[in-house]
Length: 89
Image (cartoon, rainbow, N blue to C red):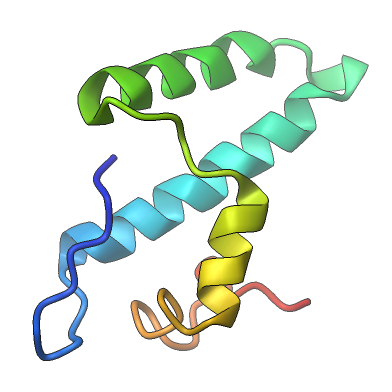
């Protein structure tokens, strides 16, 4: 996973869009892992978290931080119309 790196034109790179989708997948897996029916996901969530922190040198942004950035418009331009990037509230 990579942090957002929008070009000066404001256009999102394919890597930016992929990063946002990866965050959505991570958050969904993290939420599902709390359900005893999906306890098998705990290991996968931990692997995703460790991988991100090793690569980026910082923790994965919280879902709340990401939603706040999206609400502020920092991420919404990345894939306008995508339900994964701009989930309905």
